[in-house]
Image (cartoon, rainbow, N blue to C red; front, side, top):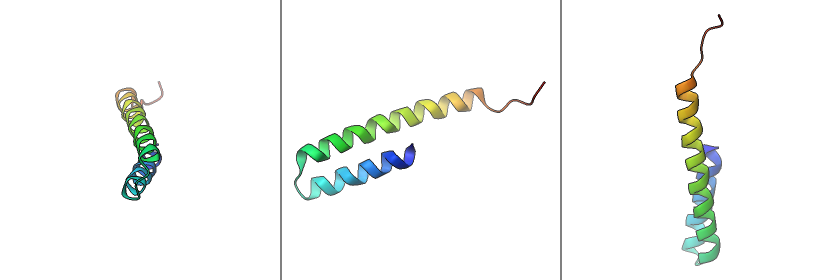
Length: 54
């Protein structure tokens, strides 16, 4: 998921350089959403952790 966020961030930067404001804004928004989802899932998995079988 983090890799997809980075890919969309790169797409947003390249689109912004070439002047495609609509595509850049959309790609940046998608990158932000994916990054937030990644952070939420990371925290959940960090809290739950791996527990040994009982």
